[in-house]
Image (cartoon, rainbow, N blue to C red; front, side):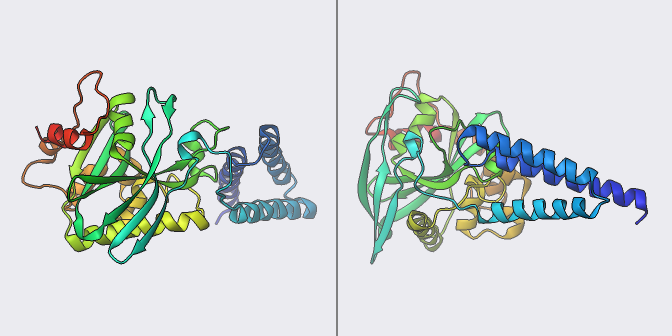
Amino acid sequence: MPGRLRHITVLIALVVFTTAGALALYYSTITPSALRCSLAACFAGAMVACYVARHTYPGRLCLAGLSLSFCVWYLTDPPKNNRNWAGEYKVLADAGVNGRIVHLKHIRNFIYKTEQDYIPRYYDADFNLDRLDGVDLITSYWAGDNIAHVFLSFSFEGGQHLAVSIETRRQETFPYSTIAGFFHHYELIYVTADERDLIGVRTDIRRERVYLYRLKLTPAVRERLFLSYVNEIHTLNSRPQWYNTLTDNCTTGILARAGAQLRYRLDWRVLLSGHTASLAYDLGLLDNTMTFPALRDQSRIRRKSGAVPGPDYSEEIRRHAAE
């Protein structure tokens, strides 16, 4: 490689590494904020200084040492469960299996006056695997047509439903940031909730565009998918994980739990989550007796102005989505 080209390549790599490192420090969980910001600025400045002095032995040594130190810190930075969490993420769900019965603890069922003003409520419930009769894909649009929050709701005979959403577990002191999700800023949480909470807050409080699609899965696949969620919910209580916008987000988590092939888990529609339903349609997981645009229109949940999630909410949203 010619010297000039090699120099440009090294420079680009250093700029990318320095930028990513500074952002990782800035969006880290280090407190107080002043320390976090200072570390990010010092890291960027030190990397630039080391690059300027790269032709000297001390400069090369410092550049290598600083890069290695950052990598060791980032790779060993542990996710935790004992932080000061935002209200909706304070309580982790847990799950256990006894024969054909799954017991869920801390199912969220908040009553919302506004998005920020709510009454926290939780309950425990048992779910019989022999009565699992459906899985619905929910897509909720909050940023145009390309970005949506995606999660599943499991249906059981007798009108019992359990919504499960893979989300960022946000700390109380940090505002939500899309960029922060690319770094060690949020832990991963599986929110298990009543549909009146998890779907209702989106349809009736935030007034987002929400779609409900019935997935075409065999009973064996439905059960395997549900138990995969159950196992992960239990595991996160003792082994927390980092959320990552690219590799461990709401959509990749669903595909991983469903055992999707790698090429589908790397599909562009995974990152642009607003197109997840289109991906599911192409995978043959949705009703293919109509075109996808027609199915999408039929699957939209339409709520009257001023509607609030009541006891019959699950029945209502399915009836309206089918009209």
